[in-house]
Length: 463
Image 1 (cartoon, rainbow, N blue to C red):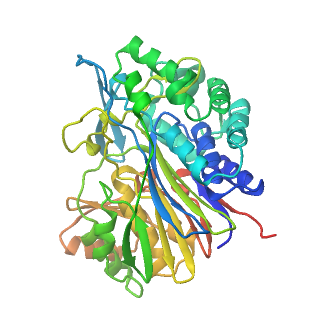
Image 2: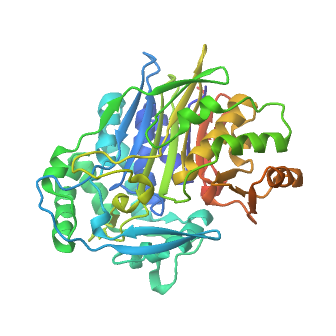
């Protein structure tokens, strides 16, 4: 497999490729790309969020998951009344309810996760990995069409407080093709370069976060920051389409889904759609503000990293332009009592597939409850149906929930007829939409970014 990077923005891909060209590992590329995404994709993610990764060490063959998702805050604190803001966000014809405000912010995990990837699998100096993101922050970055469409939906939270200056300069929402300017990120990234990732917990960035918590009534405490650690663990392995498929469970539902998924190759479009709906049906319709990236190096190591702020709390660190996460307000992630110090659940499922020759596919998805359906359809397209990665990623998707099937344009009329005959309600969308998730994939036949998220990919030329 060629060394390559796929991600949710061309600038994110360029940062990862730059790290590979400089002699960096897949982990280096993932860290550099992720930091760039925290500048270029801030309607989807940010440094004060959380994520999950999967890493393959090409030399040893060892595969591990990395949990750097947000933790429940409140260690060492006292119970207090908190004020949250209820929002309705339109997704197509649906209104999805969210809760934001500073009390929705959980303990950030992403800086610790990037530090763990770098310390265990990186080759380049930490400061070198921050450089591409810092340049983007200094120059500004092109705001792509998919991000502009997302901003229109999320404007009520993205333009709260300090966000108005960033996302509605002059009073109008930033348009597609405009320049996303976040000058405070220059200082934030300089601090991150100087202090390392631990600065978000024990340094200047951590102090700025705690000061804002005190000022606005947030729940994150100093004890929370000092106690946070990124956690390595063993992945789940599922046999799928002649490969050993490695991923994570938790709220993702992916292992169970792949175990139930029959062979799709050779089926008609209607037969394929019916089987996918039967396997995937179920789950709520919420969304997060999420992105994903995939990096593979020339030595056969791979890293897939999915990150998110949730919707975002609407609070930004003053002078640093860092948006706080809103994971405590993501109702789809809360399945029981929240205990301070515990990790929150997540639907993220960065994944790897290997056969007897080695790595076949590395992929991840964004999209909240559509994450699983996007991953399943792309993985099946590449591993089962033999499609080229970009064809599999760009192909029209469906998403079923509670008897309602959402269809992107491109499905034949007989698909709609077969679904309706089977008793499903069908809702046809007029165009591709980021509602259907965003997938980044690197496979033997190439790499692919998702057009629904203005994604991109690039392959490092062989030497």
